Length: 386
Length: 95
Image 1 (cartoon, rainbow over the protein chains, first blue to last red):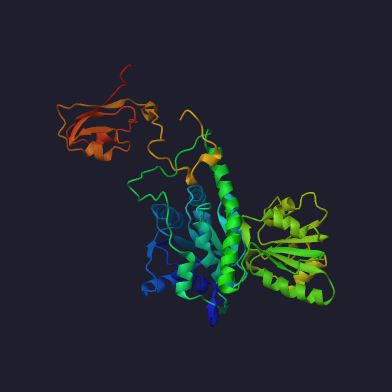
Image 2 (cartoon, rainbow over the protein chains, first blue to last red):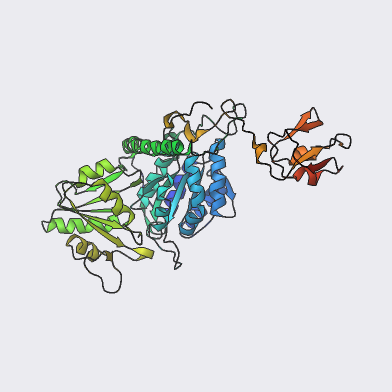
């Protein structure tokens, strides 16, 4: 374990420092709020000679991901970053990156999708690529965003995985808020991530191959099944990398974080920065002798369904907080938790909160635990209790 | 590919190496005739070879010798770029 002097950094800056230490060979990227500080800080570090990375100034996020696929398959360690509409424009190519098994690391500053146009946080952008086959890790704060970014290449480039890994941090709440962050020494990160070697690199011209072949009904299904296997393997790899990272830093960044979940009757399940607020309310209600807890999800994809079931099936009430909606259907995280808990006796409560950067206040979290909150938490206008 | 592979036999991304690759006759997709090469007019400038999106032009050294109709899709690009009028579209030959 190493003790480092914490520095005051925003989540965006912290992730840019992680990228600099990872030192990707290629970073094709297009700016968009609230991701811009990530690439801006990173580009400054590269210009100052702190990392030897080819930054490709592309004309759109669609091109950023397209260039990233080419670079990653050619054998270059590759990263990019985006938010919201950028991720939406990129979405078509994100599916292809996963299918071609391109281990691209991508920093996401989560931001609401238009419309109406908005620049603040919710998770609708991430949910848009939920089914693309990419790994999605959510950070609670700047430190976690940094840590997950350092872990990301190890997960992405593992031979059983070879998938894009999205390190998601809440736009503005994390990307732009300065907090004390412990950075690891450059050599430690370099040794931790190791070199990127690809067995079937495109630029290995002595072993030519067709990457991204056409697959008709006789093969498409097999491709998709193999892809599902790769992201399942990522679940195991996340645990292994988290173990190794913990032995290096003392900080545990597993797929799930339990906060007072053991013996809890009432548990909230949530992603991202709201976990901090929820933990405070858990402490307060625990002090008042209520058996409440928080199950924070870092790995949204692959979601550890079996662990979710184990950890939640003893709770009488499970409250799922989604920072995205699925109009006309179940919100994404609620649908997943319902699937994990199918056949169990726990009562599931679904809430949607924080769309477009609306704050989640402790009183609202308390109302959720006390079953006084409506399905849409924090919206103005008449709502029936959920 | 007589035997279809199982999902767990596909490598990452299903990369196809040349020995595994079937050679379907994509020339079957032509719908509007095919380019014919008049070697008596050809100056072997190789513009057709350079522009052809399907690598259908056959060379011996740097001399053009013919067209592989198994892969030519009849896009007519070669006819457009030929400076010597050595390529012109013609109806499919009856086979």
